[in-house]
Image (tube, rainbow over all chains, first blue to last red; front, side, top):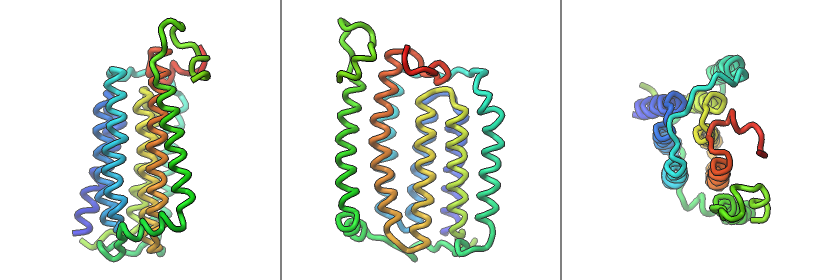
Length: 178
Length: 102
């Protein structure tokens, strides 16, 4: 059962990630990314992280992807053009990717303590445990993230504000004064 | 079929991270490049959860929680920057966005 779930959702995740790169329309890529995030949420459940699985679906697949889809629709982004540029990507990208995957595969395939089988339910964390840690030892980082989010909200509003046409189309000084 | 070992989760994480790097390098739409970054963050989150399982510690889950929060802030600011850049430059192709000033 665990193996079937793992293989099903691992393959879905990889297929969706490949599709994200393959598709040329940003909406198709966004939907593929939602597929990756949803299948990763199932894998989190297999690893006993029920709170993280829920947060993954609510925040990542929900909030962040809605933001992406809104921006794609707002900018009316069409199919991306194929450009002949980026020699760096053409010559270095695939060898680097192959090196990474081969190295990781080699390191991971050797028998180590990581060869332990993952049994569903052998390590179950409750939301209560996470809450205790979050508001205990991790209270300071938690408060700092709230300040970070406040700064992000202000920054996003300042950056995305539509400029006044009287001030001329898009002077850089506009952003600095905002 | 016996349950998969923990190393397979880490391998999947590496594959997803590699695909994210590939998308970052190959894609020619700045929004999709941004999505590739999110894919890489997700791959790292899978590693965190896998190691949390390995050590039977809840700390890894908290790191994932913070990564998700920071990713949300990053997505909001990044997409706002994309909006501003598109409004000024009229393109989403990163090849044509080589310089920050006009």
